[in-house]
Image 1 (cartoon, helix red, strand yellow):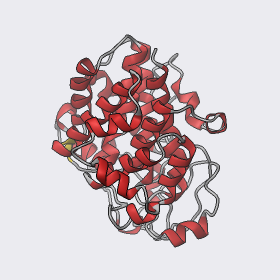
Image 2 (cartoon, one colour):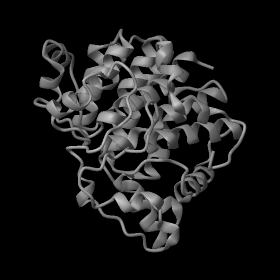
Image 3 (cartoon, helix red, strand yellow):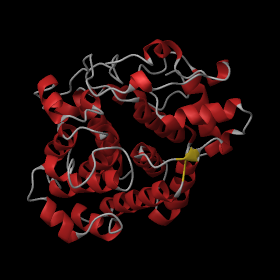
Image 4 (cartoon, one colour):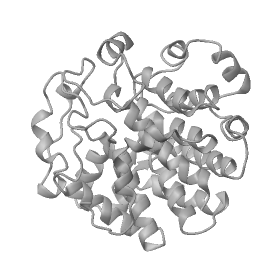
Length: 334
């Protein structure tokens, strides 16, 4: 196995867990007030001042479309933290699905999209499989389409949220674990996998770029070189050099949005990876401190920085999802 590719997956998990308590904070003064120390994993606190769960709705068409389970009672209420029941060091639901994808692929020795869709559907339908209060729009749309009678491989939607990139380092690490791989072999699998839930060119293009970067870095290409070679659609050397001279919250907050939408969110993630190319901890903390969709930017920031640097042991010790990566069972309720 390629240590850099395996490290990239772990780095994504760490970056998400660090960002989790400050996920979707859009006022950084409130973020600093509520979480003055992000040097360690933190548990989320209620109330969440930027929460928009009060205006979020999901009514399942039938019991098979119920993916909120016991969390449904918190939707429509003000101040609810999106991840209120997660302990410090835990991961949000998209990253738990990434761990599930890794485990199922390694355990069976192959990637099969139909088998994955069965696991995805079973996991999301199982009450208590995860403890997240919020599930993204693409999950809700997928299960609504499924309840309408569409086949699972036709339930994805057009979506430009950076959270759609979450599976990339997990699938690449799994494919690497079951055999030596090339970017040329992995690119069509990654693109097809992302399209199961996320349609459209923005996700497809960013997914290809992240795949190319991680493969190049696994072969020894320095992070900054990989970003310039495969990220030119989103950033340039001149931009990155200029942005690196400013405060992070000036770049991600003024020049680039902190929100989830591509292409800005991908450019913001590449900025953090570029600026902190030689310091994993500094990069993931800087990303978290800028708020917005920091957790999902973390799949890019964390994977790239971890492919280039060792992950300090303190982050791995406190990471709850490590146990979910064991490949001895395919039980979707693991």
